[in-house]
Image 1 (cartoon, rainbow, N blue to C red):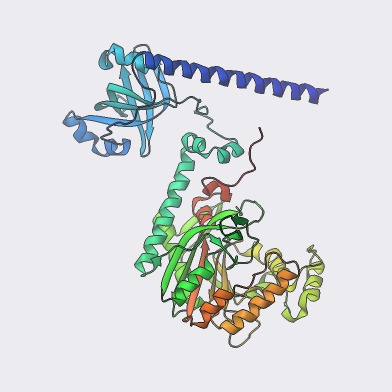
Image 2 (image 1 turned 45 degrees about the horizontal axis):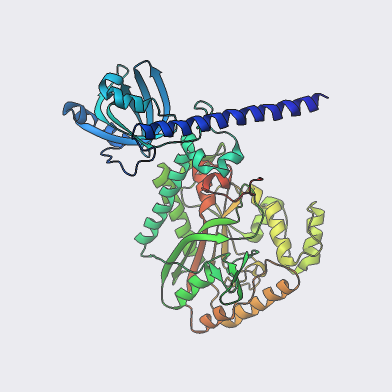
Length: 506
């Protein structure tokens, strides 16, 4: 009975809140009509802004001394009315500026317009700068123009927008209501800009490759499928740009990179979004050791530039990005963290038995490569908190990497782990077209056996290798996960402007 009463109460409260919202919405519509009656548009087409809040803060002494008039524009987030005078907090892209609105200074006609301004509205103000008794920089309004009428109320100032789903679903509102969210994305922008500058400084050139591909390649992942009507063919949203970037390397581009979206038809979690951003680069005449050096240098440089330090705190744990980072072979990682001597020749049956002995549930139909990934994820990854290169991956799970000369069961490949999740993947690139075809045929057999993530054969890529691919190192870095670490964000959704969500009902 209590539960029913509580449900009824909750439903009743929602109905009351909706009624209040509807009334407020209508009230603001009425204010638009009042503005029209005064000959004032609610949505102005332009405003000649002379200063931002930050520029006023920098130049305020000169502006005050010379009695310079400034024009500033932005969104009103608070209004404190005191009879014929009011104080407002106006926010633009650079910060906050207090606005002092007084009837005898603004004029009665303009003050009537101001009375129709609500929290959330965007306005333009012209006037002189002064400092209040408490020392706060303020613009006294000598002219005020409504620029955009907000029809919906902003979240309450002191509690902000806290509902996580609403924050992700209405990111525009999240950015308005929560200044710290905007700072995260500003840091993301700074990190990506610095990565570009770093690579340009090493003579890399930025390129673009297809988002829709006839053959989904370059990674082990399930693709999204679409259809091109004019050609009447199925196409795949790319899971990686890798094979096209390598084609460019064959064509003579010796240092190239791309920062762009990948799409993988996989689950959603704090570390996974089906649409995500990757940096992928290729450098001729180097190998995976060269890729380790560039990975360390690039990420440490991004941290130093964005945060001013290479030691950051992530979820209450300090992570030290200062090079050099720990390096450990894939098989040795099992020995160190799980006390396990892993025998790759044991095959799927032997690896499944190891999983069972360690209490790890697996699909009975899993192949050897899938079981290797499961074992690594369960037994090793949770221990890799500080930046760690795990290198020399099995050939079975590295179809595009060059084998080691001394042991063909392993490849010159590494993955970078930080805070127990993968940040980067790199190889000495496999360039032998005959060996590449053999491996792709093996992957195709796995695909034919039901492994939807196995790599299909790309005959044109093999043909490109037949023309000659110089010795090359390749690297991919997950930008979203890197930004998570450098902004202390618990979820990948916190660093993607518009993460994928189930559509709203109704």
